[in-house]
Image 1 (cartoon, rainbow, N blue to C red):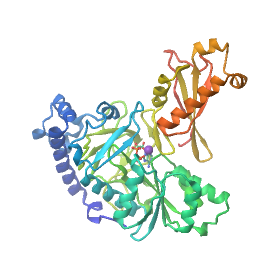
Image 2: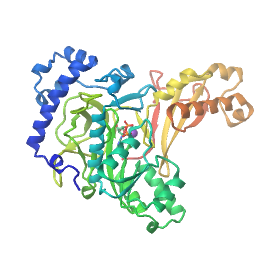
Image 3: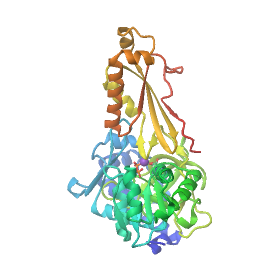
Image 4: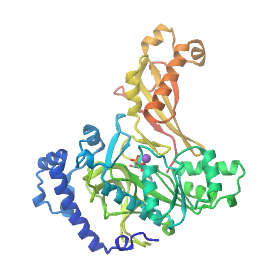
Length: 447
Ligand code: ADP
Ligand code: K
């Protein structure tokens, strides 16, 4: 089903004209409203009066995650605070969150693109949707929620986690649609099987899964384990939230439609920043075309994928392939964005630990696990007369166990993720030439 057929099937030439006009307006808008962009455009020698639109888009440079941090919290906003109807956050690069804002009109467009997405995922007005995306500062929960309402669905706002309750509601309320991260959908499927709940006890038909990378293997597992047709929903807070792109349920595996009347996509080379040919892999870059509270020009997402028009399409908008990875060191753990530097920031505030650490992400069943190895300080080693942090040493010295516990708690409180903490003796983590070590090892095999 198409929620807005006239837009979703707009002839490409007409779509380009619309994008072109909107881009010119957006550039003019940010120039006059956002000092950061005014300075940036002036430095690039661009004035809205001579900016030609799409033909000139590559001249705009890039906006990066660090620009959000440098302008924290509201420096990139284009409207006075009273006109901001809602704030959301996503992870920052140094532990400081990225703040995003929406006017009432932005929220209405957000709901519209999510409604379009859910319709493409198979939803029809009157169906029930169980929303297992986290509600709160993340865009996932509320983003799906209002889009589902706009489409005319009955929303069950259960939020993330609480597997017992999720399974109970799936059986009692008989929703047709599940929204969750793919790894959580896998958990639900496994738990169904483990508890011997028959598939007939559920009424699910569709699942819209996103917020983290996933594969065709995971799709198969979820599709058989929950007896659904599972589609990909993609998005990011800086641009809007979930619903920037969505796969059509009848075209599964051929890519997700980017709603390009609102979000103009480009794919560029990760080293040179130059546009790549259609279908080639590179970094996905988005320009918002209609955002009012926080318009963003050429946002460097760090997501690696490709975009293409190609065959088998019920809509005219461009498709993107699955996310193949990231060009930075951000990890996505159970849908939550996480920069290892966030651990670094916590270590800096703790006594008795060295600044050396390593984060290891792995997969245990279908859930992501993260372990952090941290070296204790040489001073602590000396005062406890240790040569390494063995199990025996941990048993003998309460202060080591306290250190381990308080580090785990700080990580949980600050980052929102539970991590296993392992203490090591100073010097035990491998150093490379420059004294630096690879701080991240991602052992999850998502290829
Ligand atoms: P969300 O809450 O939608 O995940 P965030 O801003 O917290 O938004 O995270 C955005 C990032 O999450 C994206 O840049 C991308 O790396 C990842 N992401 C979101 N959806 C998907 C998806 N369907 N497939 C792969 N990665 C995704
Ligand atoms: K995410």
